[in-house]
Length: 204
Ligand code: 5GP
Image 1 (cartoon, protein in one colour):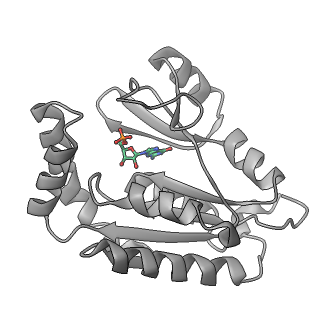
Image 2 (cartoon, rainbow, N blue to C red):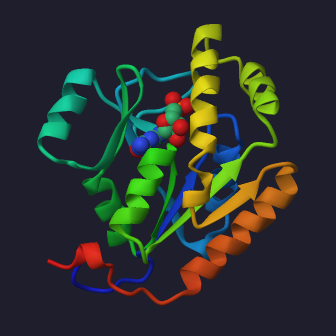
Image 3 (cartoon, helix red, strand yellow):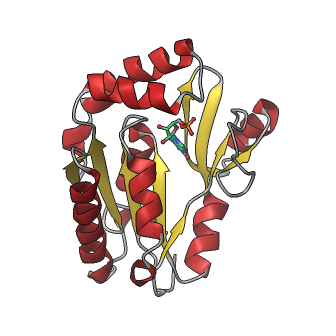
């Protein structure tokens, strides 16, 4: 990064799946004042429901994903579930910054914290906390796009993820969606209004 551009901020929303973070991220994307563009992750999992390649994810074969890992094409990657890899391509961030926009991520807690570590100044890292693990179970079952086994895998992972919440810049409790949306909007607006200082990890 040599030149300062309009935009250029990174906004990370991480949470156990079913916490409502995708709803919050979609809401923020509709607010033009925030100048946000969604970071489309790459994944080796298969598309679910109406998911579209290049919009929801870049759906790659396991072979292609591993090839890109080897080539160091990822800013971060994670084996979120066994054989299900997810990651952020450097090319995706560059694409969005070239548009003069801020990048918003809907990613796993480990990936979120990695981005924060790489770009500590540019990144706002927010953890969305579900009211309880019980509530999370209900939400995931209602979504019913997955098998019982997969849902149980996600719930087991949720407890581990909850423990990372204090490492984020802010925690939003998603008890009522309206409150969570307001809080998210305020935090993002404050972050993008700040001037950009070059992050230590960006020094060549
Ligand atoms: P899902 O299969 O429900 O779309 O996503 C599963 C998990 O992978 C979610 O917690 C989601 O946030 C996470 N995830 C999606 N994209 C990325 C990414 O680029 N990097 C990492 N580390 N996690 C991701």
